[in-house]
Image (cartoon, rainbow, N blue to C red):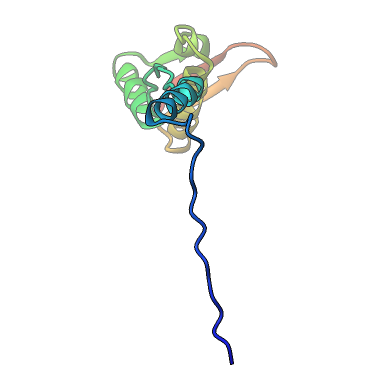
Length: 115
C-alpha cells in the first residue's frame, strides 16, 4: 500500500500587503466598530424599597393619627415612588398597623393609625 502524501499549502500574501498596510486596515476596522463598543453612561436614581417606605410611614404615624392617601403619594416624583408607597401601605394594613377608609368611589382614602 502507498502512504498518502499530504502537502502543506503555504500562504504568501501579495507583495503589496506589508505589515504597515495590515496595521492600517486593522485600525480602520476598529475605528468603524467604535460605536458598537462605546459604553453609554446612564444614571440611575435610587429607589426607596418597600421596607424603607414602610419605616418612613410608621415614623409619620407616630406623630399623626391619620393621613390622606394623597398626602402620602403627593410628593412622589415618579410612578415607582407611588407604587412603592402603595405597596408599603398595603403591607402596613396587612400587619394591622394602619387602617384605610374610603367614603365613596374615587374619593381620597383616609389612612388611620391602628391603636
